Image 1 (cartoon, one colour):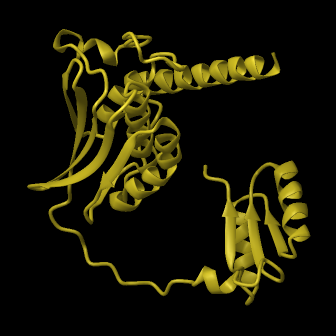
Image 2 (cartoon, helix red, strand yellow):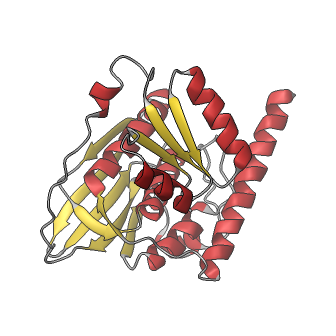
Length: 261
């Protein structure tokens, strides 16, 4: 009973979060943070995330990547690909799933292939509407709330990229994103990197850390936790206080933990 209640609460939380995101996207309140993004590294991370799911489901999951830097919102692009992969796993009871990067003239194409139940051509537009679900016989499992592809459709438009879908009932589907790439990238001076593996090779003992958060209770709890790990912790309630501290000291922290605004 406790497990059932827990699953119900998780489902309600996911539903509310998705509805909030759709509302923000419809009101254009979700503004993309355009940065040069290593899409190959992003795809590799998603591959590691879904490996366990594939193993438990008995599916053959593979990724194919190429070096690719694209100017996009990394958080939104990750959300789009995660939703597409989740959808592929949900409707693929057996077979294969592929996440692939392909180069196109002045563009990068990201494809998600599956050998799942497929979609009838007459319903390809309907799958992007809110609360629309494909419920073919034999899929089983948790079906979700039918908002994943609705969020994908809105985020794709915000990211100014194109998406196309091809599918055959009983054979599988392919979702593809096409992202424009910068023709010319300004050369960037390489910055010396900090080898954190060497810094923390013997644990966190003695490491000097700077924690930035506007929630004083979070600051205090993080300070207590990190000090239990042997760290020397400096806290700051905001960016201005952190900069003021850094300007007054010669002993800079080896790492900064900061809340993203």
